[in-house]
Image 1 (cartoon, rainbow, N blue to C red):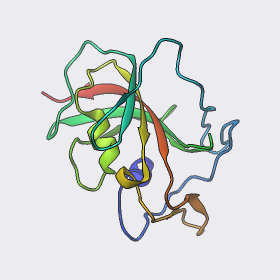
Image 2: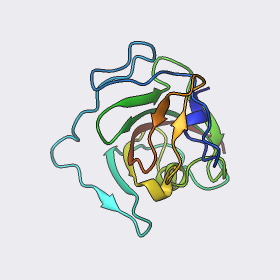
Image 3: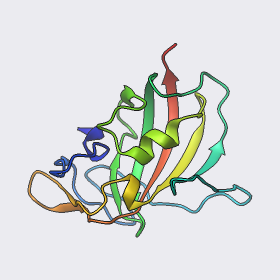
Length: 158
């Protein structure tokens, strides 16, 4: 169920977890969003995606078409956590899969295994004006939300 919050579906995919808060969700154990360490630069791409490399990896590089394993935690710009793989198996998918939100795909490209990166994804590269709800109908990601993800690239298939 972890990747459901990443899938960009016009009908708003249902999320199994509950809405967290800035102290972290007890159900999903989402840690609070912390500021970037001092001295870490944020890059803004032409599409509006912002990313910051917290740790540059040294392993294989993620690129479109490559299968990857990623640990991630996602927050709304308010600091409310909505999803995480921490404490679970990493998420596995192919970079460039059109079911993933565009900002997540773009933000992975160029990462190396062992790297940690923060993505700040504007609504146009996430769910736009579509809200994402859980299986109880609760809004987990409001429409027009900026999403923040901390990623750790665990593996890239050769």
